[in-house]
Length: 315
Image (cartoon, rainbow, N blue to C red; front, side):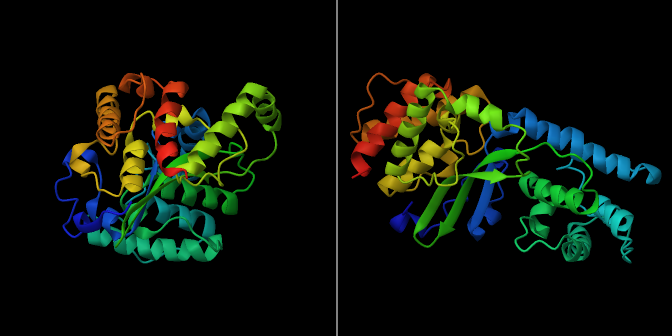
């Protein structure tokens, strides 16, 4: 969105600490956040909690290293260093326990440099700063690449994808986009499941309506699967809706006014209520839609809200 003059001052200094957001990372340029609903995907849970966590612990069992969380226990470089030694035979001269942030970053830099040489990926989706900040998306990408390279016989869940919100800050304002990010490739064993979903004419009609509406209000949908997109879930917490309104209407909504990472029904209700209030102030009529409708993932209510924006900005 184009923040105009409002972007001259630092808009992030009022953000509350409980938003769990690193303002420096946000201002630096681009950040990605996994949508909360994607975190509930059973396939993602299986990949993270069973396969990857099990692979790490089985690999390092002889060294009596036990990892309980892939996002919480890899940030200091210790586990990655041991995995590098276990599978690539590389033993770096590094302190075993890096206790300060600067020491941890130095260790991660050395370990990831060696790992990147062996993983041989042209476009790496992880970096030192993201791993150190316990970024789940980057950590998962790294671990999947390691399993694929070092133990390809390990069976990863097929076609694991997550919906991510991409926020990019530039001199002209904040650009937001929703993308589908692939964690594991499709082996083709769920082709029937996709076919069953899209054979329903009503579902196909809903998919067409959703994509046309979203394209009209400026969201990129080219990367979405050809299966029905969970529109109701994407907007149920109000975050993307608020960012979309601000972008289309050309003003900045202070992060202190809403919850960027809502983790309760009350937070989601607050966000959606704010969005509907802004629409009313802008003169956009959303007939008979209550905040609870969007929060409860009512498709009809969500489409009414988006259609109001589409009629104004869709041309």
